[in-house]
Length: 476
Image (cartoon, rainbow, N blue to C red; front, side, top):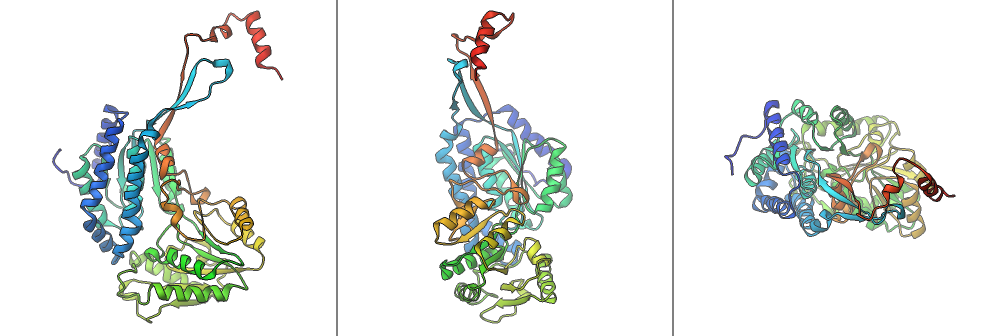
């Protein structure tokens, strides 16, 4: 293996690393199955050999990140994705036979999955391991080289991943880059064969514009306001526990966290009682609780505090669920905060919250709840708490969202057989599972002509034979 190089830090290094990956891809454009499995094995070793260092780096970037959450929400799903891809890889790589019209038989048609070349991955700060490793798994399984841009908000994690990528992969398979906004802009302007971005909707627009100059295809994993719809007759305790778990994981800094609750006005008081109790059971204290994570930095803490104060000034009712009544600002932690009577034009009901703040919206009739969801941008996730099969089917058919989880939260994202992706303002394209392999592949159509082909009958000079055939081919 070549000597370890310093992590990429400037634009010239960026171009050099990209050119190196392009050359490696050109030299071996269709890596065989055993090579791809070696890459996946190397990624697994990288994680398993350095688990404690990865957990520590993420926690340093956050001020405090629960080690259990990093293992549960970042390392475990990544390792499962690697194992799933390894098991399925042979089948994914096989050419798929396609049907041939009677007019072109006995020719044969198939689709050959082919690596695109070099994939770019832009990683956000909230899950810096899972949201880098997940796309890497899909891209490597599809036979691509990968270049990653880490968030400037997670420098410790980024520096560690850059050195580990070099150590386990060398300079010609996986490169991890670190830097600020200027480097990110230069990164997205590179002529990747595919670019996957995870982040906010506003930044996603800029990424798409930058990629357009090179006609680079993009997958955008964005966010939005994912509702938790609680219907009449739902198990309110079960719903409360799932909503609290989904909202307070990583202190709400999850793109698929329940962003707000829609609950029938007759059940609202009972549901909020259950939510308070569930939060107190899960987190009886917060300040020194190793299970509860901090807000990533002062900027985001002030953003959340400002939105709360603006809602309060506009007449909203703000309630913190802080069982031990602790002072939390010094450790940059924020309790689960319930917001009732929030004005519709407040930031808390317009913007993705990305924190442990939970607006509560009430409705009278079920149709009103569906209309409320459908009147807003399509969310990345929709959480439905209901035991009525007919109502569940209505929600599935009458709403559009990136994904749906019924009677739980978050878990649809970590199912190895399910794709993950948004729709409209919450994103475009998919990764995870087989769809991730397809995202980073070109499905090359192949037609193989038979020696017994009759295509000669349709070639010029045209005459009676082709006229007779056309009568059959164009028949009503």
